[in-house]
Length: 612
Ligand code: G6P
Image (cartoon, rainbow, N blue to C red):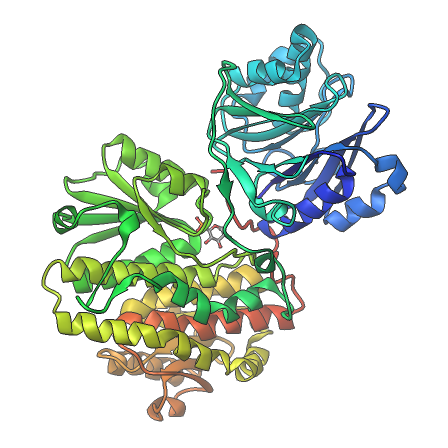
């Protein structure tokens, strides 16, 4: 989704903010633009549709884009086509103001009508342009950019992260947020503002995460944070704890591939320091809950979107199995508007890699409004969901850049699995199970490594899938959500239509689609329902369907049914999803790569969906 980067300091802003928005390309965008205040105090604006490279090509010589103050934007269209006119920055009537904006101004039509009646002329189809005219209106009255922004935002309904510059206020950037992330970066004699730390981490790790309704004014040597009423706010400085290398592809062709290969480490980091071998249990201090409180839980509700929702479905299976606590899993977008019933002693979990997904955040707020305790499972320290939840767990997967989530998924599943053991051990789960679970979990990173060594073999299988138009993923029990995730991975990045189904449900519909052109990817590890899934595969085979199986090492029976088999090491049923999903991620990756597609930035998708 949209990205913002701003710079004020002694250096030339242009290369810094262009490099910054390039670091945000992974979030998904369709156009980009910059505004620079140069030494003659002229405001220069450049924008283009398409990739940032198009913007760079359109820039004049460096001396014409030199300036110490600049803002940049990548746009993911919500209101108005993704063309040059609608790209940010937007200006008012006299071109003295430049505004970049993430989020949606919900009352923009009313504001636009009012401004037009006062003589303002609009040129774009965006909601953002009203902000530029509104700030321009107040700047003429107040003659101070901070005050003008504060006054304009008092009239705005909706969500925003904005950055504004004006040649009527040289040497200044004003930025503000409500419901859309915004971060102040503090460098040596320079400041940054961004919607995502990835854009500025090569310059500084010292940041302030702005809160809703806060406005920050940056000058060359200072910053000041206020609210819309201009009252000063003291904010804590945080140090970003991840490394520049995590936003570099290294030896890999794509971030997605790098992130798939990082999973032995990222899974380990999710459980590191959280296992209690002596008591055969788990500790999750961030939940902020005493043992007595945990024992009292009667129900869990988990809200999430996309891949995080699939992790939640796996969590339901495992938590219900080990802790015998009922778990409801719901898309956050449905939960937020459904007036959900939250019984007493229910804990709500919000799962979000980014910690910024608008629907998940709204679901969290709705649950809190009903008096429920909400815990977050997030990857991004300082994100809105992690700050607004009443406690939670960081998955510590490191920066995930590929739009298709991989390592965050396995880390979320790891956390939900250890949560299940924690809650289970408070009840009837035997210490012997706890002990063997800890041993098995500790062996998972090595087993993932063994599957990754099959990368070349999986690419060959991908060759046989790359021209398909459809694919069906089948799994049962805890591997049914893995089938959903495998299908999602394939459709997201290869644009092949794919569906995940509980294997037995196939005969109630999808079986009608089976013929020699329909690849069926079957997740069939050695477990209590193995024979059942084999019967389902016989039904596919009888209709000439092509079967690619994910099976446990040593299973020769499945070879007779399958065109190809990808073997995974044996583990306990609870931990199987951490292994079965790995070949599916690699398969999707290779199919998309063989089709020559932009794996890390698939069309129309965004890494972090900060609008409804
Ligand atoms: C987008 C991303 C998905 C992600 C989903 C939820 O759709 O493309 O990869 O699973 O958002 O994101 P979250 O950050 O809340 O986990």
